[in-house]
Image 1 (cartoon, helix red, strand yellow):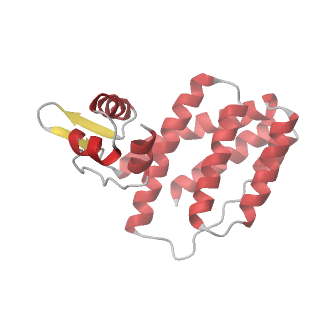
Image 2 (image 1 turned 45 degrees about the vertical axis):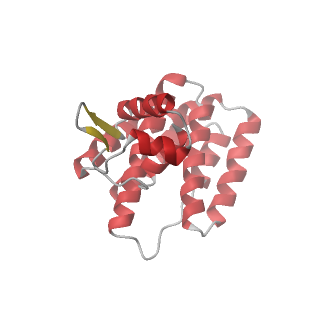
Length: 193
């Protein structure tokens, strides 16, 4: 599941590319049952489409998807940041701040993308609410896939660095409303570029 998820998000499998179960078992050296289970799970996460008697395909990417994903992420990501500001431990807050400071200095785009994803995952955990965390992760993966798709189609000559220090500071100081606002601004900015 993890391998296929990563490959779908990073567009190793292009939108609408057929995915053959037998080829995947040989390629990944994994049995057919786990491959089928992973593909069913990925279908539920809108990354794979399964057509009975026709085949399995990497899900298409439509630009209308971006708006739908953004609407959900604005609310849920803001909620997660607000909850993290209220519920995180001192150690988690300090660790997030340190990581955000390191990420702000990073110039390699692949490390920036991975770092941004790590910031989001940490905030989801710090929110201490498993219900939105599942939806947050799913929608973040869809947004990241869309970002890879847009970047593949029209790469930015000078990618912007991600500066999560103000957000990390809001969480560090337990300012839940500031954390909510900053996260919503981040999601809106990333969704619109």
